[in-house]
Length: 224
Image (cartoon, rainbow, N blue to C red; front, side, top):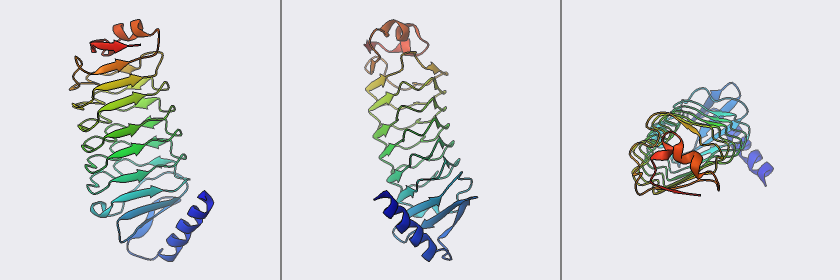
C-alpha cells in the first residue's frame, strides 16, 4: 500500500511540475501545494528552503525519503491542523513549526533524534505529542507556549532538555519520564508548570535520583 501511495504522489508531482504551486525545497526534494491546502513533499535528502505560501497550508504530507525538516520550514502556518512525518526524518529543525496555532497533534517517528529549539513553540492548540524512543535532545523552547498540552511522556533515550523547553505549558498536569538517568535540564526547562500539582512519574527505584536532580527535584508529587 505504501508503494502505491508513493507512486500516486510521484505521478501527481509529475503532472503538476510546471504549476506555480510547485517547485523544489532541497537538492533532491520537490513540493506541491494543492488547491485544497495539502502540501506534499517527495524525494530524498535534506530540506533547506520553504518557498511555499504558508497561509494556504492546512495539511502536510512528507514522503518517505526526506531526512530533515528545515529551520522555519512551516513556521507561521496558522491554518495547519495535521502533519505526517515519515520514518526517514532524523532532525526537526529549529522553529520548524513555530506558531502553528491550529496544529492539534503530532507524531514524532522513531527515526528522529533531535528536536530543534522552538520547534513547536507557540503551537497553542497542541494537545498531544508523541515522542518515540529515539530522541536524545529536546531543544530550548521546543514546546514553549503549548498551553493546551496536558501531559508529556519523555522517552528513555532523552539525555538533554534545553532551556525553557516546556516554558508556560501551564496546563500540563502529568509528566512521565522513562529515562533511568534524569535528563540534564537547562534553566527554566519547566518554568510555568505548576510543580505543586503536576505529577511526575519516573522509573521504579529512581525516585532518589530525580528528587536530587536539578529542576526535577522541584516537583512536589514524584511517583515511581
